[in-house]
Length: 134
Image (cartoon, rainbow, N blue to C red):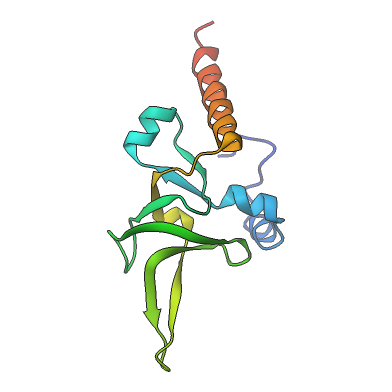
């Protein structure tokens, strides 16, 4: 059942939106969950992932591995994490791309813009919670 009129449930339109997304739209789509400690502290569930955030991989071959994000590759919808590498046939090491939905952020790289974003998201969430009680 469709709940929001502004969001399509059509598979074709979702695929088109995914593959033709601009860099700013891809940034929002490449969000990751916060761990329970950060979730309690900031009052939000997820945030767009960023260079130098510390993450833990929760799915796939590299499950349980931790590291710092070295690159957010928006074109391919992947992130590269420190120490997550594999060896090519010629012996060269390359970093492995991980989808942001398969990691949990354990430490945020804070700056003034991110701080404002967290406060804004928390305020919106609090307003939504109080909406029904008025």
